[in-house]
Length: 148
Image (cartoon, rainbow, N blue to C red):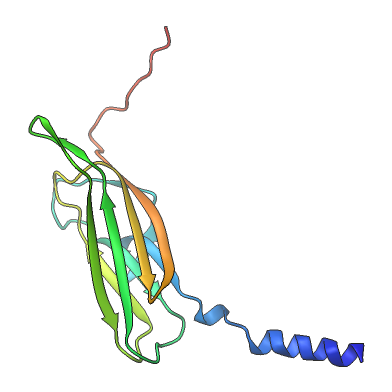
């Protein structure tokens, strides 16, 4: 009896392996179709020099049209003597039946808000990416704290 139960459980676990169908997402710099994941990104003064974005790998093609939605939350910034409130970009595209990958590519424009940008991506109702990137000015001097 115990042997039969053990074989049944093992068979169920092997048969229900979903490791290949679990969506995976990456966020970072695009290099020839691949992504180098980063936590910090220097803001370039040359628009379009680097291509950033996220990519979702579903593992298996979708059987029906599936929505992909994303939110990119930008920090507030100080511009022309006043604060510009934080902004959120919301996007939506559909994966067609048979597709198993989605990519969204963008560039940070000169003058983009420095600080923490938050990225959230959903495939259907499933959250597949919830990450932050710090956008910084590579020419800015680091702040030195003085202990007195």
